[in-house]
Amino acid sequence: MRFYDTARREVLDFTPGRVVTMYTCGITPYDATHVGHAATYLLYDVVQRRLRDEGYRTLCVRNVTDVDDDLLRKARELGIGYLDLAAREVARFDSDMKALGMLPAFSEPRATSAIHDILGFIGMVIDRGHAYQAGGAVYFDVASFEHFGQVSHLGRDEMLKLSAERGGNPDDPVKRDPLDFVLWQPSAPDEPSWPSSWGPGRPGWHIECSALALRELGTSIDLHGGGSDLIYPHHECEAAQSEAAIGERFVRRWLHAPMVELDGVKMSKSLGNLVFVSDLVRDWDPMAVRLAILDHSYRAPWSWHDGLLTVATDRLARWRAAGSGDAALDAVRAAIDEDLDFPGAIGAIDRAAAAGRGVGLAAALLGVDVTSG
Image (cartoon, rainbow, N blue to C red; front, side):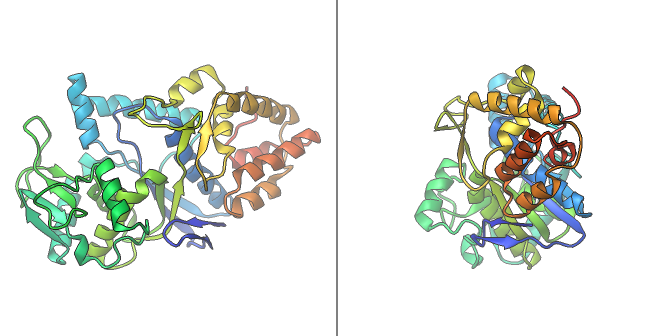
């Protein structure tokens, strides 16, 4: 299998051991699963299916960020407990993932389950001279880590811009450097708080994934990623603090999914133009929804529109009419292996189905069930 490694900026062979460790950043459960989320998890789902097809065992961890600025803000607006909001949205997310036929995660740990691990991890970073206390918080000192920028390869100006847009608070006056990021912070009076050596508070955004990855998978991960909006600051900061703490490479390969637009405009909560999976699977066959999302390159942003579901529904009917069988299976394997070419894999199945050959096994490798409906 070959695919584009974000940090190395080239297509590289993926040659893990027989047990493949994977970590994909999960949801912050204050809103429903949208198409962009689904595209990320489908990318990792098909990668796992192909690896298992070759006899590998995959261990994919997908966290739940159940303590976070956005979650606490939304819970405050709704007048409900943050864990109640998280429980409601996690249940909806789980229902969406089941409808789309996702493989179960090896582990789905929550940030609140890892406070002890997070505190220990922060202590390691401090002990190694990569963090400092200021203003009641603990910050990572980016100047102390010479490889900062190794994942995103962004210049300082772009980092500052994205930090401001994505919760990095570069204007915090107590930081030594505007790019320094918080590991532990004081809680507001109405926010959850845990005791620590640096005062009561709660974890920063990035630290949970480092602590959970270390706890669930060990010090080095074969494959890690999420949506491309997480490359900076989240994954850049996660890599820096992890390698600062453990003294070795944190991730062997970085794999990111592209942003999804709606009718040519980037989907975002601020614009209110999100397309939710729960709405789609209520009105359309979930396997058609899965196909509509998969039929795009993972290497570039793409735009969602309702016509995709019409095309996918017709395609699914043709595949089901062709019946079971192993036609196109080797072609699908080859397409996935060569830079995760899902559209190419779908095209191979289309041609076999058009010739009246059964495509059940090939479709199943993409996670599409053609035996029902």
